[in-house]
Amino acid sequence: MLLCHRSPQRRWYPDVWDLPGGHVEPGEFPGAALARELHEELGIEVAAPAGPPMQQIHADTFDMQIWLIESWTGAPVNVALDEHDAIAWFQENELGELRLAHDSYLAMFTEALAMR
Image (spheres, rainbow, N blue to C red):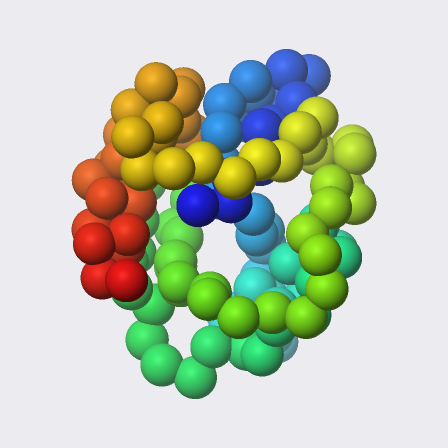
């Protein structure tokens, strides 16, 4: 699982491991926003997901749609240095030790990895 560490200086959710991605621009479809954000944050190219998200999170300050991306072009690197101070790959047994951005992530990550 590839996660991004949010910089401690971030206003929202500082110093936690989070999924790459970001905001949907006006008039943009969520899947297209994901493809754009993955390029901006990780320098990779992905096809916009065609199907529904595997999970949705509704919180007080945001709504998030989450897709499982298993194929891309390019090597993921931390392109968004102003947003993340690190990116890293994690095995399932390492995820429970991380400070994650949302309480539901651990169960969702475990479920996603079990689907593989």
